[in-house]
Amino acid sequence: MLDFDTCDRARLRRDARYDGLFFTGVKTTGIYCRPVCPVKPALTRNVLYFPSAPAAERAGFRPCLRCRPETAPFCPAWNGTKTTVERALKLIDDGALDADPVDYLAARLGVGTRHLARLFQKHIGASPLQTAKTFRVQRAKRLLNETDLPMTEIAFRAGFKSVRRFNSVFRELYGRAPSEMRRGPARRSSAPPSQQELQRRLA
Image: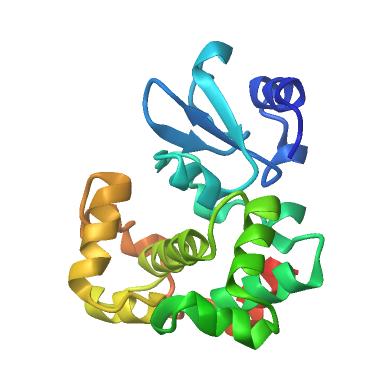
């Protein structure tokens, strides 16, 4: 994680070179943003900095609807400096925790559950479950913005176990239903992002 002063200077300049390297939580609004967010910058005393989107959400911040943190490039912290973390993130993005528990993921990686939790806390700043939740929301947001798929299909493609849970998570994070966040049809295509595209974003 970058130091506070470096993050603050980059945020105030809206420096695109730092996009994905950190996220800003604004204490007065409860929202977290990318450093390139077009909204008027908050006062320095009112912000916190996080190494990843899951870390910001774990701290209780909601994603910004203007800069859309789910579209931020994946940063080195997300890919991890350890092979185990990188493999775990790819498996989670492929849906490894959508139906199975964390100990199953840990077994696939050949490590213990506690050790995996420690690695995630060190490199991601959030647990594997929080990371999986963030990935599901990000997949759903992309499908909402880029396709005309019905809500039920988006929920299950994104990895939610039920439409009820899909709606609940969106209301918890954004304060509104998924259907209220859908963009106009002229800006969407009919095809969801491919597996190759998801892997490219993690590369």
